[in-house]
Amino acid sequence: MRLENKVALVTGGGMGIGRGIVLCMAREGADVVIPDLNLDSANKVAGEVQNLGRKSLALKVDVTKKQQVEDMVKKTLDTFGRIDILVNNAGMMGDRLGMPFLNNEEEDWDMAFAVNVKSVFLVCKAVVPHMIERQYGKIINLSSVAGRFASQTNPPYSVAKAGVVTFTQIMAKDLAKYNINVNAICPGFLYTSFWERLAPIIGKMNPALAGMSAREIFESRVKALVPLQREQTPEDIGYAAVFLASEEARNITGQALHVDGGTVMI
Ligand SMILES: NC(=O)c1ccc[n+]([C@@H]2O[C@H](COP(=O)([O-])OP(=O)(O)OC[C@H]3O[C@@H](n4cnc5c(N)ncnc54)[C@H](O)[C@@H]3O)[C@@H](O)[C@H]2O)c1
Image 1 (cartoon, protein in one colour):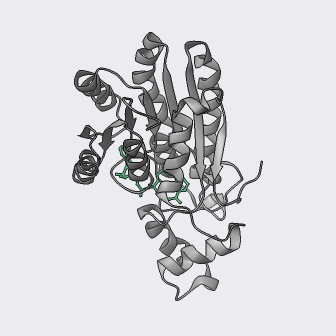
Image 2 (cartoon, protein in one colour; image 1 turned 135 degrees about the vertical axis):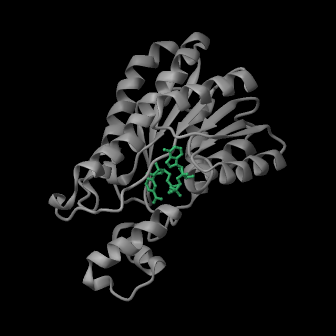
């Protein structure tokens, strides 16, 4: 029960990695707010949290919209009175790949930055004054292995996720004096709806992958790029998030923790 009586807010917590983080935190004793574009899936996960004996609140929120983010924080504070842990998990990769980058269009960059980076700024701007007031906070931002090397597959996503790490470090420096820890997690390869969507697009662009199912394409990437030779799971990311949110990690800030089976070693 390392997060007993803590209140966590996990953006995009309705499925995939976000759901894994929500459930790991609830098992450790946290009450969890679940803002997601998809209210149905957020409600389902909220029910799972309640089955674990913790409180939860599902909200329909687009984290790229300032007003919706501000309303989300107000509703959370009205309901729970505080936010101890913030996980900026909502994010996505666009459908149009690079290889080369000339294939991308202006709107690919706008979308990648709005969903993956601007959202982190908007949510932190709304939550951090409250954390400063309480001189306490744990912020965890979801980057990616794609943000740690020059991923040609989707340049706007790769650059946006690198931006998440840089912004994490800027906030860690700004907020250290208020006892607020800010870290990033860089997941590797997880077969969530993210890869279910991505794999067929990669398949179309690579003749060597012709005829393979989405799952087979994903597995071929894992085999080629992951030293431990296995995919990661939402729980793997949840365990890392619990650790970073716990007092055991009180002296860790400004770091990017790779949970990727050894794909990136820097
Ligand atoms: N799956 C992977 O292999 C992988 C690897 C590295 C990093 N990541 C990152 O981890 C995070 C979660 O990925 P996932 O695999 O669970 O993705 P996913 O697509 O399975 O789930 C994303 C969730 O975020 C929500 N969401 C998307 N845009 C939103 C918005 N504007 N406002 C509110 N909610 C929004 C979706 O509704 C969904 O519930 C993302 O930031 C992603 O970039 C994923």
